[in-house]
Image (tube, rainbow, N blue to C red; front, side):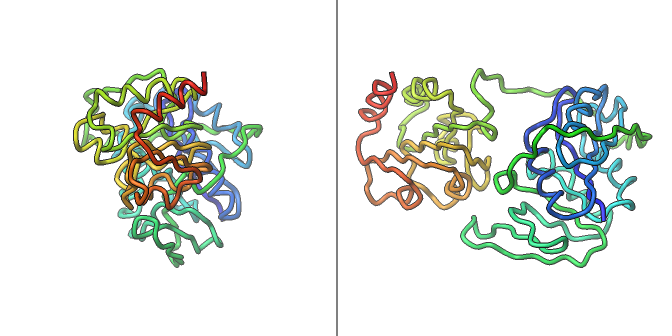
Length: 309
């Protein structure tokens, strides 16, 4: 029994989600191999070889794999699938683009967003926006799984796995990479940040989100938002935290002007410490908050910043 982890990377370094996925793979039992499919991706492969618990790193290096196009990466996984009992990918946009294609080609059912491994064939995953946990048992010969990173600790990076170059599959020719626009920020990446400051509809406008910036600066925090704030056009889509946004579990999550709709709670309730600021004492966000402040956020946030000064 051997598991294959599809590494998420940018050719130069691994994304943190890969480390969480390796932890899940280790819990499935047996050896763990990591596939690094990319172009000029030696640095990412070297980083993968240092993940504790990994027995082997497979490197498929070709120009048509450089941009992580799901059609090509999925074909690379299919070429290897016969050697593995489990194929795991992070439950990120990258993994969610590849894993369903692999499952369909293998004619197996995908097990999505697992948060716990009960046994090699039994897994737990949240359903109904996290209000219930489903225990899923698979009898498929190959289990294709996406892993919710917040459910597993990141694997250590003190390993020394063997690195093996493998033949890259041919370009499918179905898609071509045109361009990529990356949001640039001096703040930590939202899903990897230890502290997140999020604003909701209660902020009133996009201009008012600037009130949160000094607080985020003091805490070296990423900035997030509820879907209501994103839909209102206050902030960009990539700030959205929730069931249809990004799933986060930082050490500290500060929710400002967020009522706490179930979809938002599904994306942040695993945070270690939750602080809520809202003028409505009946707001659902207080049901998951460790600390709650009832009051006007436009007065409270500057006071917090002053205290942190």
